[in-house]
Image 1 (tube, one colour):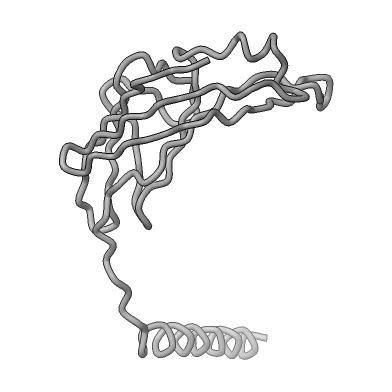
Image 2 (cartoon, one colour):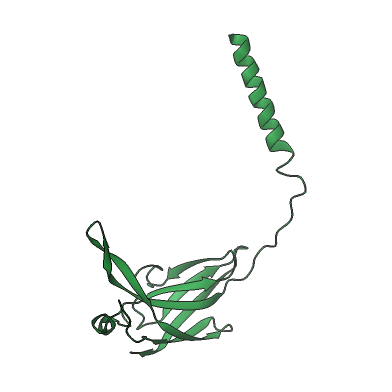
Length: 158
């Protein structure tokens, strides 16, 4: 019995050595270190309780708002104009009336392999945001370089 256990340990040790030594390090391609830390697109939506329910609770619905943006790479500033669209089936007149610049949800497209965090009192992405004041985000590239972006809502049309 002891001989069988020693044989099993020997086989496991051999397998580990073979699997971790050669194939993991040989001829791996070298990938570029992404250095971009940009916000490339700003999106905004209004979220509300929809008509559908799950377990008796309403499912969150959303209405994407129309956004026109102007990007200034030199100052890392994005000015956006937001327009609330016309009503539709679930996005009723009553719900459209509730849309407010002080309670919007933002999400962004950022550079490949970058990360983004809200700074200087700006709410975390995914939380409702008061867009009546400038929003600040730090975008960090994969190589560690970071840039602070400011998003200003210059127009809010209902």
